Image (cartoon, rainbow, N blue to C red; front, side, top):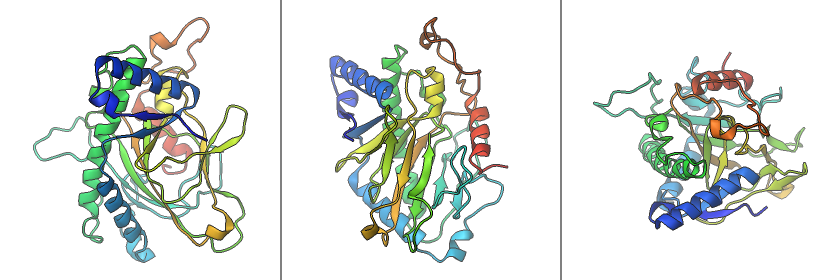
Length: 314
């Protein structure tokens, strides 16, 4: 499926007219499809390539060594999570993946609005921590610009999200789907699900497999072109907009048999606000024809609920 393609340069460096046009195009795509592809997103290709190389090296480490970075009690929010720990909401079957999560970095001298757990330091590869730190900041910048455009589309001040995402609870996740060594019980690597957060930025998966659920119930393959990232709406943004913006169901399927011997790597950035952000439906998105659909939650309460539903928090 060819999802809408937008050029972030038109919003960041464009004229007022170009900014408005960009926000309208992005907003319509999120209302109709829930996914877009973004070019000129500001995350350097060399950084992306270095990050993927380091991620592949990390996941090739012996299992015992990787497990030294798995920290009990953090609900998978920092460090390594081994196979079989996470499942989609409503499914008991664990996803066939292992992953590493890196969270907000509080610089020396900065007063954090929240008490975040420390990131888990990785000794090998040597550039692991530095690359995750640099990548995290680059994703924050691009994600902030996209949320500003969304705010404009919703006829809010373009700085509406700024205070909520400043030092927010975003997560950079590196995922490894291992080679398929025997006939799988299912054609699915990651069961159908929706993302929890505001928006997700997915850069350069190493293989095909991402599919989204179309309006007619059919599964449609999605792949970004060279130099593009895929961005989708998460459940928090869907709640905030009372379903005006769509958090589209998606999944990852197994490759063709001839590619079973290959691993698949994926690096999404889950852009979360701070936990005290209200997800109460915007009044502008509630009407007689579109009554309020959700109870008033904070982002922190909603995240806690969802982590329990997918098995990461007990």
